[in-house]
Image (tube, rainbow, N blue to C red):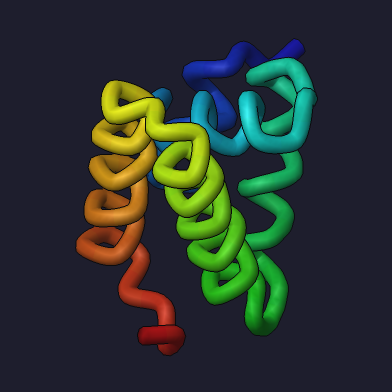
Length: 88
């Protein structure tokens, strides 16, 4: 059985990125990690993942939750740096 760490290592995702995705979608961290890993293996998946993280950041800003916004912004920045999606 794979652990969350195995999924993160396989997809080169951080706990932060997966945590933001899990919170945004309402999925467990393990399911979010599995979904994100599958997205990264598909054409356009990195762009979709970035859009989801950016939407999570926008929602946090709209709720005026600055701690959550900082967390989601860090996830967006890390994702861009590591996965270099085409979307700007």
